[in-house]
Image (cartoon, rainbow, N blue to C red):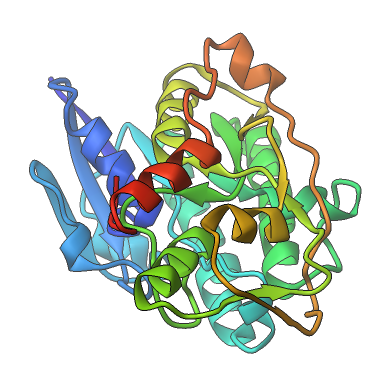
Length: 290
């Protein structure tokens, strides 16, 4: 009998790639639960069953008990979260409780997609932004459910994911896709001051390899999935080669984060791609996807 795998946020950037990868396993039936807040039906892939709705309603919307839940379906923007705090609470706090209760009843494993913003203030993530606080405290709750109710879990941390299907415009756009679109249009690249804040940009393919590996083999622990190479935002803009304009500093903009990947590497994961090569391919392809 095939295993039923549920991916929350399965129509989003990371979630759609995860669904695509999981659906290639003939032993899996893959389902997505997404409210399409930042996800898109253009990201749908073959051999996946799509359910539309909020994670807070998971018990009503998902009429079966899965063998595994990859919980990616949460609000995921740092600076914008100050203005979107009601959405942040609904999607992250109300959502995680509903998902954990669903998982507890199902008796299945949950892989929780945490946030590397947690490590921006020494591993707490409690003051940087509404987004950072909800993600860090959600991680604690997932781990507590493991202790309180013997819920099998793994927590992963992504580091600045880039690649095909990123959101390219608007207030939820991601940096690499935003820079790519600006270069296609000949626009100025805007960098939030001071520009020296460093990020560990990690290709989506490496993220998905890590997610599947941890989903299948990681238990009761935290697993970082991130490139060891870090670059400042200003350095990234300079790689693109366009004209740069500095913007004022913003709340919640951390300067760096510790990349903790030893436990993921112990499972056999290593990143295979780097951001410099990706940007160079974009340049050669006139800023289209590689």
